[in-house]
Image 1 (cartoon, rainbow, N blue to C red):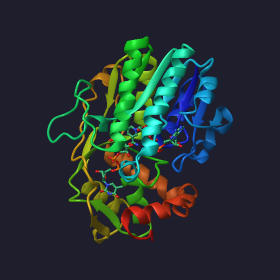
Image 2 (cartoon, rainbow, N blue to C red):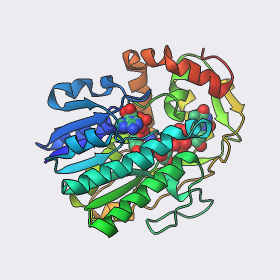
Image 3 (cartoon, rainbow, N blue to C red):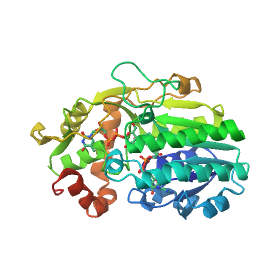
Length: 331
Ligand code: NAD
Ligand code: DAU
């Protein structure tokens, strides 16, 4: 196949591209806008095995051009950080709603065989007890998740109205190498390595369902190739962990003292708990390869060994973001 992968200069998309190149003979074209979170460095080791196009998924002419002759589209392109969506949601609506609509139109016009929308468990909202299945109603809480849900609904509408062969995957919180340090785990790891405090929102008892990034990448590929058109597949990590316990484990792995924990003002509208049933994707043969304890230790080692990757981030736009978000300078 020739696959157009959007947003693949980011954290999960770049992992996905590596997985496709390692496991198939497929040709990969990447379309990425290179926002603050998109980095060519994330594809450095596979640069000569892909075609890279810098551009936005909402650019209709460009997308029509790129989807001509393509067999499949996998859409990772997104603004992915909840806190940024609370501060300013414009780019979220543009990319998740307009961008998804443009991609779907182009896929329809060129008769693209398969379309996969990479979505999130956040579209279901928060769940105090129990577990979300694919039949659970959408109840998003933040501008990030509301615009992602809108993208999902557009995909379903194109399946029903035009018969597009589209599949949606909804993943839980990913972690692993190359995640931008605005997210809890890389932020906490880098702050701990620098002896800086670790900000914990509210009481720190919010629960997330941590999924190693390579496991999500494998699930997406499985759903692209073997998922039933029109279906949604939840992909949840094997462990549910409260944020405060995540932070404590990171402090232990970096041999830092718990006095570095700093409770800060809670995120507005903060979802308390996410929990997914992955029974349906497991029926396709997927299972997670790593428990959180093991994956987190590997992730800490990766950040410790790859200063070349994070140093330019910590000395750039991220510094201003950090100050705006946390009301103090990065150490
Ligand atoms: P990321 O922020 O690391 O990467 C997003 C990429 O999309 C970047 O390379 C960015 O430049 C690109 N992009 C943004 N807007 C674009 C546009 N308009 N046109 C083209 N490219 C654009 O995000 P990530 O964590 O890798 O997330 C990838 C996808 O997975 C997103 O759709 C996200 O909603 C979904 N997801 C993420 C998680 C998670 O825990 N990170 C979990 C489940 C689902
Ligand atoms: O659940 C899937 C989602 O996971 C993806 O769709 C999103 O793209 C991804 O960003 C992630 O969203 P979260 O908001 O859950 O991830 P984040 O790493 O921002 O926060 C994880 C938890 O940690 C959340 O409860 C908020 C909390 N937190 C986060 C930061 C950045 C803190 O306590 N302190 C922090 O400084």
